[in-house]
Image (cartoon, rainbow, N blue to C red):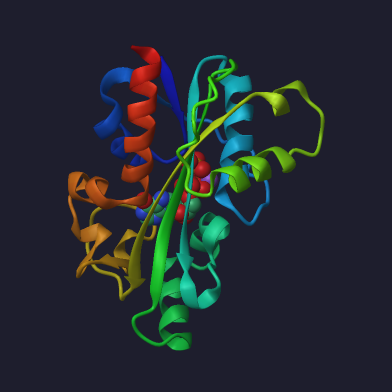
Length: 212
Ligand code: ITT
Ligand code: NA
């Protein structure tokens, strides 16, 4: 059994589209380390979640990266949503940036099952850097810190727009891709193009081979 470790049900709904009945949610709030990239945050979370769950886990760290703000809120997206709210993030972008206010959603999935992996090529785009960063981010010397994790990344480009739509979650209403906000799409449509959908597709292919 694979546990999708998140406090966010929206993520689980999307994951189920790719992973069928192989996965169930584990609502565990693992520690999110402070880092400028998602990879190390997800890797650390996967190790901690595996330690907690004792069975194979996948965690998912995601964020909205606004070009004109040097990627802010990025890894701080959750904090920005809780403190400012997505409308304020939109208003900030609208007041400070010219159209088209380009942005990207990024997602890194991290898998950990306590075992060793075959040295298959890492599917992440910036693989070496991110994996190295994931290892480098570990400051203490707990045994869990040396557990291998496998990272899968996805991203999607779009732009920041006034909120539209009722679907999805988080920043979906202010993120437009090809004329439609993510909140105006069905879950299935969003999954077909989204950062998480792309990461999930890579993970599902790898995991399917592994568990065959
Ligand atoms: P967990 O850490 O428990 O998984 P979370 O919602 O805190 O849940 P993240 O730290 O990955 O998850 O989320 C960072 C922020 O980005 C948070 O505010 C989310 O609402 C938002 N977010 C993540 N994925 C998103 C998506 O697909 N669409 C819109 N917003 C998203
Ligand atoms: Na989080």
